[in-house]
Amino acid sequence: MSRQQRSSGGTKLVFIALMVAVAGCYEHTFNVGAGAPYAPVVEDDWQNFWLGGLIGHYRLDVERLCPTGDATIEAKQTFLNGLVTALTSGIYSPTTVKVRCRTGRRADLELSAEDTRILVGDSAFLDWVGRDMPELLDEATSAVAALDR
Image (tube, rainbow, N blue to C red; front, side, top):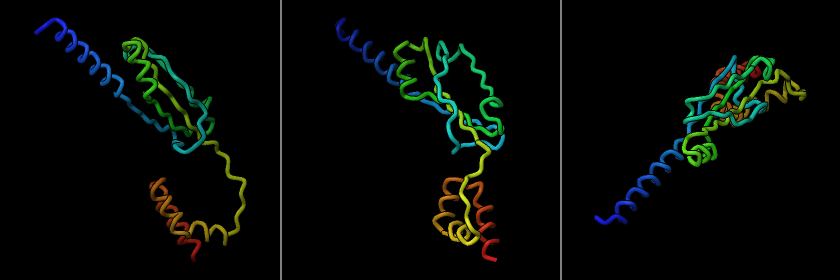
C-alpha cells in the first residue's frame, strides 16, 4: 500500500469520526411542579461546558424565573451546538437551555355557558386535547358531560 493510500484512509477515518460526533444531538426535559410545556419561553441561552461536557456547571433559579413554581426546562445539544463542539474538537461544548414558565394568569376572555359548551363539546377540541395534552383528556370529557346535564 502506498503512503498516499494510507493517508487517504486516515483522512476518511477522521472525517467519519467528526460526522459521528456532530450527529450526536440530545435533549433532556425536566418538569418542575406541574410543568409548563406549552408556556412562554422566559430563558433561551447557550450554557458553556468544556471537554465534551465534563467540565462546567449551570445552576438555574427556578423560583426567580417562575414565581408560580411550574416550569419545564429543556436542555439540548442542537445541530449548531454540535457543530461548534466538533470545530473545537470537543474542547468547548455548548448546550442550549430553554425555560418555560406557567404565568398563573387566566385568559381575559369571557365565555357564556352556552359558548363554553359549544367549544368544549366539539369533537375536534377533544381530539386536540387527546393528542396534545392526554393527561387532561379525562377532565375535559367529564367537563363536557357536566355541561350536557
